[in-house]
Image (cartoon, helix red, strand yellow):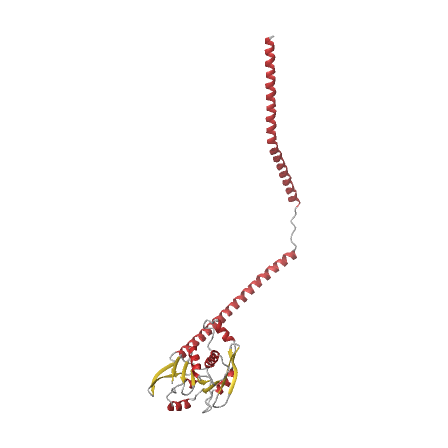
Length: 322
């Protein structure tokens, strides 16, 4: 009985162990299938797609037929290509011809500019070199500087050669006017002589005529720089009264006679070249005119209290009293 019970117990344990093993076996198989099946299915699908694509390409290759090009199309393409090549050659020749002509023109212009530049500098250097020669003379116990100046044509130097400041630009583009009168002839003028960046020739001619040598009637062109000096002096004084010009241009004959008669007249005066004036202003102390002229620090300023006038010229800055 006991033996029979033990055998039954062993049989039950074997059945439990067998069922457990079968369960784990089925679980393992299911896990392997779940992992491997997607890869197998994907590989099968890829293979099927590739075979289908290969079959389609083969069919399309068999059905495709290359049609020959139409003769008219080939002829038009050949004609277009030949015309394009010929036009390219023509353009290249035209460009070479234009470049050669342009190069010759540039060389000619450069040589001409160089010649003009050299001539201008040579003329400028000749004007600058030895412009003034100063001698010392003794007259009545006084020492006087006698200025000998060479002839200088009235001209406007180019304002672009030096840097231009804001004040210079406004002065250049504005207008300048003067009011002057000649007590010897009674002539009076009030006019604009500079406007829109240039000197007015008609106005310069009228001023030159008013400043003529009243003794001989000779007329000489006035230096525009001298007119600018008078204009700036008027601005400094803040007056609108006209300048009385005691002496403007002086002919060589008149200057030689005055030089022989008066010790204060230079042998080669700036008056001979239209570059000096002797002035005064009615009812205005000439000391005030002299102080303003000296403050400008431009040209020569001579103070003649005995004759009641101020001398101005466009030479180098200097002052004297006689």
